[in-house]
Image (cartoon, rainbow, N blue to C red; front, side):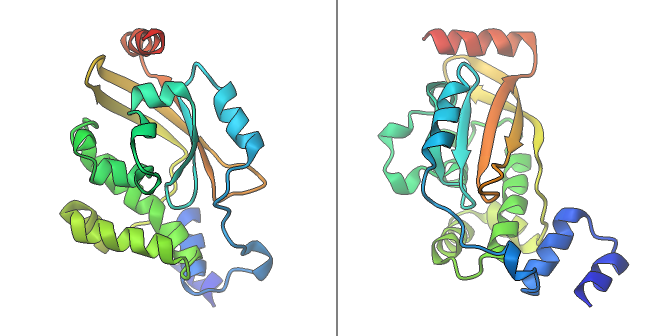
Length: 206
């Protein structure tokens, strides 16, 4: 019945998976507890991707591993407690990141749509539910987008960043999922133009 409904509504693949998760009808052999521990092989891969800025996120957007280049591009994660090393928390709450993204509205909207998929897949994940409740209470923009109930998983795109030292940097991002744990996301940034390439190289030298 859920399959017939998804066809009748002409749902996109991400929306179809979301509908099955809401109905808790996904085949049991595809459901497992999400991994929140860092795989040392994935952590090494993140380091080996230098000089490209890269990081590994879990299904809650927690930053599980990162290389030096992503820290120089975004911020020094070592200055933050573990509870704040979350990509969505940084975007919504961290005072130094509020104006970091030129198109912040698009970044937040896309992040909300991404979070809906794991929220539906793991309804008993209290930590994820707590994060979403915190974001909804603290950020009016997040609450509005969450109420729209959009769901989308975007594997690539472009963002323009306002770096406090290097100025505006346009980056293209790629998101890859390890076969061993599809709830994790490997995020890789590349310069989108020559000026941004020079800026990233300057950051790397600094």
